[in-house]
Amino acid sequence: MLDYHLHLWPHGQRDKTPTLAQLREYCELAEKNGVREIAITEHLFRFAQVDRFMGGFFNQYPESPVRAIMEKYWADHAQADLDVYMEVALEAKAAGLPIVVGMEVDYYQGRMHEVSEFLAGYPFDVLLGSVHWLGAWPFDHVSDPVIMAEWDNFGVENAWSSYTDTLEELADSRAVDVLAHPDLIKVAGHFPKAPEEFYDRIAEAARDCGIAAEVSSAGWRKPVGEAYPAPYLLRKFFEYGVPITTASDAHCLADVAFKADEIKSYVRSAGYTSLRGFRDRKSYDSEV
Ligand SMILES: [Zn+2]
Ligand SMILES: [Zn+2]
Image 1 (cartoon, rainbow, N blue to C red):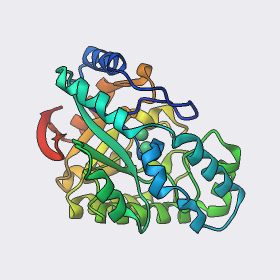
Image 2: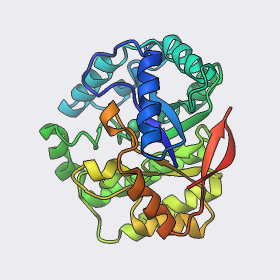
Image 3: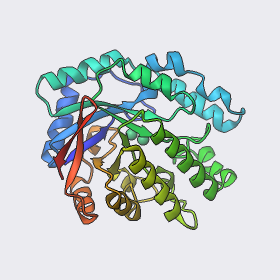
């Protein structure tokens, strides 16, 4: 098993300097839960180096209370030092810990070439791609009532349609190796009349762009209460030959390898017998 989606810091917490001891603890807990390799994948927007060229990204959208929340969220998060993050992760690898170095990369419409150029300057093993916001609306902030009220304004069908369009663009940018939590749009538990048509498009995007998909236990910690992707979508990925990674999307030590056994049974039940790992952004096959 792999846990290929791990954060070092919870949201809303000022970033502490990562340490080798912290990464060692992550690896120990992972191993205890049958996970043989982990990927550290902090959010790209948490780094001051990214703020220097991507800060103000949300100014392009109309002013609104939602945009104001998003801007504050961004400013609160863009504090960490990417050079320190890389240094500690590489130190952990050099110390022989079963760890690869990654990043969770959001989709920045119209700016992905800049993002790719920036990321090419660092020795990443794996890059996850995520859609967390539609325009300036961070639809997955499930504990913020203003953000959740926006579901009524946006409409469920429209949100799923817009999410799927955005995910297709992200896949087509070829900037990332894995589609993280590929049906994240279900996070708050709102489903359209026919989710299958959106799932079909998501599976086709992964297949056509040669990108792996992530199977994540994080959905079990959210209002939707099911893993990402939904069983229908996981079966589609398998049918289309889309490789998968497995992940907890932990934001703290306690959630490392969260429900790893359940995820193992889940992917096996869809037919998967191998997982995709990455080194230097090149793939290799790993055991489920
Ligand atoms: Zn995410
Ligand atoms: Zn994440």
